[in-house]
Length: 338
Ligand code: AHG
Ligand code: MN
Ligand code: MN
Image 1: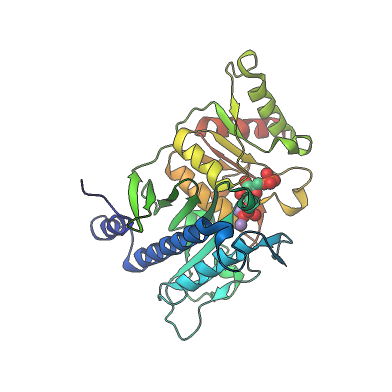
Image 2: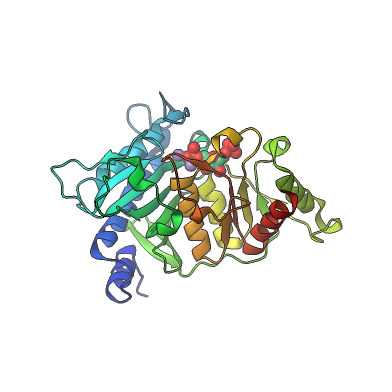
């Protein structure tokens, strides 16, 4: 049986379908190589040299969050891999206050790459799935890629997005606006092999994901929605729902991509002044692009996530995404109760 590797898939998207150009193909190859590097580092865990890759780095990022060693290492792996290929105009990351410019000894490309190098940091030390999330935009003509304003484009402008999940297997899920595909890392060959073509999120579900410990802070529409789910077969929904929360968006979204469900990290009274918890440009937008490409939906409750024009690089946002019919119910409650 001939297996389709990521390289082959990308070449076909370029040559046969004309969906991507050679630079975007290179970019996606390079990002996948970096994810492979991160996967290897995670696999070594505490056994790696110099005390291992787990634990605190002893520093904070621009958002005041304590950085883990692996947050920093993953960021460095992505920066280093993408700097010199000539496919990028600039990069931005959760772990860097300002955009990272391409050193002028290297050629500049037309694309901007944004990433959450290590998503689900609190899972690192307990050996539970973590991931990488990335989004690709074009650098607007004449725009300065060292400025955040060049990156501040609506999610609808994304030309590609993806995530890697570092779980029992390492997966790479990708969209170039032509549906969603999933590759599994074959560790022996060191290559990503196509294992799910055309991922589709079932429209209906019986599973939801939300951090229930925040219930007392939620807006009334979210409270009403979750109360309906908890009421199960005896409530307005007339069926029992199950709940899962991995605390790594990549893992929760991947479960939804695989068997349906809805994920909520809504704006609430505790995070309202920040705009929410999750970051728009390198968490919510790429996930929204992937979810929409798989037939799902992604909203803040009142607005399609990908329509938002960002005003800051590290802007946060309310996130409700997954199976379309569930997302529509939350939106309906927001309309009725606002
Ligand atoms: P990160 O590790 O990149 O900061 O992201 C963590 C995010 C997201 O992955 C997850 O869904 C959420 O934070 C979990 O938050 P709680 O700990 O509040 O449940
Ligand atoms: Mn994250
Ligand atoms: Mn992160």
